[in-house]
Image 1 (cartoon, rainbow over the protein chains, first blue to last red):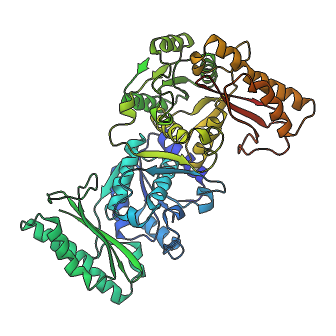
Image 2: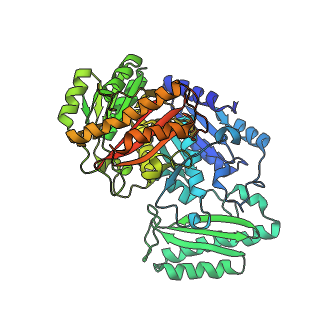
Image 3: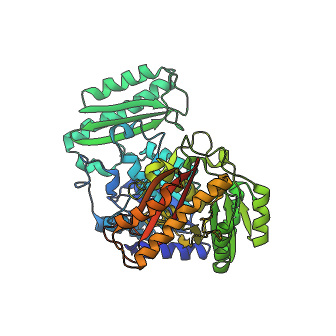
Length: 277
Length: 277
């Protein structure tokens, strides 16, 4: 069932809670792919009711980013949500989420200044604000985020903890295409030739994991090997970092459980990917 | 019943909601006076359950402000809460509200840069953050704020609206001592001599209201008359402004419903007061 009105969504969630139903929530920007579907499946398994939001959130895009061209196809998304049999799709209007005079934001003074946050100033402020709003509207017991956006997952977990919100944040595994490319709505931007070159990102991650498992624990060496694979394929490496999975601090000596995070441009498309060691 | 544990408070509120009880909430910094009691009485009238929080919130004090000497008397406060027969008193520890590594804040990009916000940078960031946290913990249906802190009341109302929170913000009338002094926990700081001089603030407000009712609509003239009364009594006038009660913008021509806001130092004590026209 499609809901576009914020107050209607609030009322539905309120009633569901009153009836003692548990709510699972999958916030998305739409243009759904198998990654999103895996989140919906997780939610359906864990909760009585699953609500998916589709909202391309303007406040998390920088002035030179791809807000306008971000892929949208509501009809297709609704068909997918129907096939997966989620209970509600919440698709609010930007002017209702951010009416004239809107001025309240959630900010985080750690975690958001590094990795993607360093290259996308204001991005996490927008993410935290919209997720906070969506949680208040949808009132989920559990909310599902893909670990493809690993920093986002950690930052949202931290917001919920700091602000004493009543939501369990569930991080779900990154889903890849058969050839290894991490699933992303932005993959649509890639030409066939760019898509080939983009594969170097996952290849580099797999290589690093392989080297780590063979005994290499120096992050510099691992990153050097990754760069070798990516350098002639991607157009710009924004960062490759091997970090502690909880606080996102770079490691001096790599350990099991650490995570390698990558952001790179292929053509004008910014892609992110990661792998847990 | 005194609750100091955040998770216990969350669980109690969750259970109350499940039982269909309505929760009224009175957040305070303690050292309770008749103003607070009037909020509790309002809450008791409107709701099944009334919860009072007592928490001197460190994040809303500036580095040169009175956090350390802010008056505290938990025993006395608990006695008052018992007399008024509120249901729960929530008194969390600062180190539980802001554990090591705490880093999430709620900020507002309008309304907070003027009046008190101008003289207390960061103050409203601290207020919004703690109120957001307390609302998430206590889950009130209605929350009660004194209009003595008028800007705070407006700013919290705006946060709740912007972040789609499920709380009705109820502004309750400012309560005065018999001689006109606005009730405040900070009045305790005043010596007898300072207290006398502090009366000039309410006197000036009453005078301005009287002049307005007699036809004076020029804010400059009203403020000039107020300054005459206050100048030789208070030690510093931080601001006197006549504003629109909703957006706190200064008025060029004063109308019924506008509000006069004052902040002044008497000795080292900062006092605020206001009057609705």
